Image 1 (cartoon, rainbow, N blue to C red):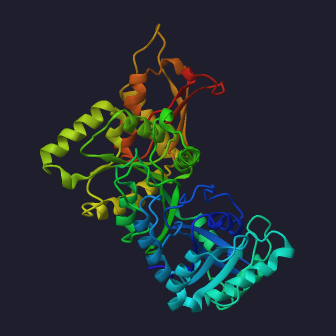
Image 2: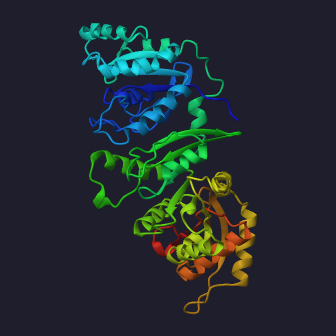
Length: 457
């Protein structure tokens, strides 16, 4: 296993500015900020650097340890945060400096006291230097000297982070570099198909809130995971709904980030529900991934709730391929996030598909393959004119992309394009789980029109 990365947990009651502080430390707008309490509901981690110290900083759900009924699933949020407290190397306890000491701050402080050697208190929202004295009331929490900070203005952050990281060694391998080269795996699907449960099952830890209520995940949550020599970033996306049903502003931004997560992914795992199998929204999501030209694995979840049999599996596969013929080239795994059935198979397949997408074939092999194929099975002549191939080469990987220089692109019919892709996949090992792009270019022409370009799933 790779060396554990230093992890800093941000904790505090709702709406004290935790996500804003995350954005300040990461110099980004990664965390959703909103005046509505409870917007952040999961343990969301981000790579961060301060000076020469590199670490993961984890945003926790807005914790409420009292009996408050107006925020749903609060007990589940608290359970996740408590696990995060135990796992974290350091903790930043955020309080509202303008509002002053709140009874709930004391409740949280009592819970943190056994871990006080790794806790610092940050009194946030002290934008005006004249109000810094307000932070002194937080000495009563018994967790040491509070640091007066402003997430919006940036005041006080250098002093706080220097104190917090004083006993943390500079990393031998850059966290930022490590996670920039990590495999990014987007987990997508419509609401309540089990995306968060699947991520928790893969990493064997409860990092993301799971509930039967559709829409539990609001942000695109990045979970960093090291396995052997490989690093992974699993991105649990908010359930993609029909546009007409995206109403809340928080949900709108979550949906936008889910779509961006697909565009930025090295591979996408699409989750289907084995009970409510393949509805219109499922097809739209799959086509969204196909349009993005991303490697893809289909995971049919909740298999434990069905009558498991080879025939039942084959029946669903037939339905899937009949409705979406391009999926014949993509892995389909039947399993259960709840029982972890076939989770190992899915995890083993992820790097295999990514590596397949990066496959490069020498120009000589590509030329030889297409020349023999054209000679053996040319397309029908049109108007007495036959298709001739001059040269072919692979120009890109991820996705594998080939250009064929021919005499007349219009002679390549859709059926013949599909035939070429099928034979290409068979001869060079399938490109399983990967889109393949074939471009046809006239000898002296640029690629300008749909007639000249054939892009195959």
